[in-house]
Length: 216
Image (cartoon, rainbow, N blue to C red; front, top):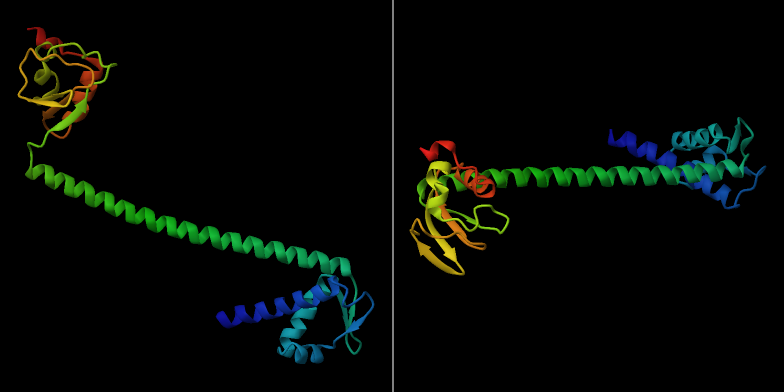
């Protein structure tokens, strides 16, 4: 397969070389250029390669090949057009190869990233399962409606199934804060609970939707 591709490349390159010489004026329209045998000898290619190159140029109207009369230059304009199209084709081929290489690299990086994320999730789950009392933390922000309320006002555990274990106020950590502790902007709340407790606590503090059953 490689040999076939190399052969095609050689005759195409030969056709391109001849067309370039015609385009630049080395050969003028009406000039008779090499016979196929001398062409093969000059470019050190097989007679079949030379024949195919001439056939390409003849099909494009660049030269005219007549048996026994050699090869005659027919159109410089067509030679210019052929060179331009070949240049564009090379550019397209380069871009396609470049894109394919980048996509392959990106897919490989995505696969590696996916593998690393899976490892991270697995390690995190195992770490948390062996250390169940490592608390979650959330920072109180001024937009939270829970700002300015006491812990006892929130019925925190009943609403979130999570337990507050500490609060950091202005850099000072308060362990087991009392029920009368006021929640203020910038406080960092530490709590323990199951895997879904973080999202429940965040939603609760942002919306302060205390369950109706807590009034009983």
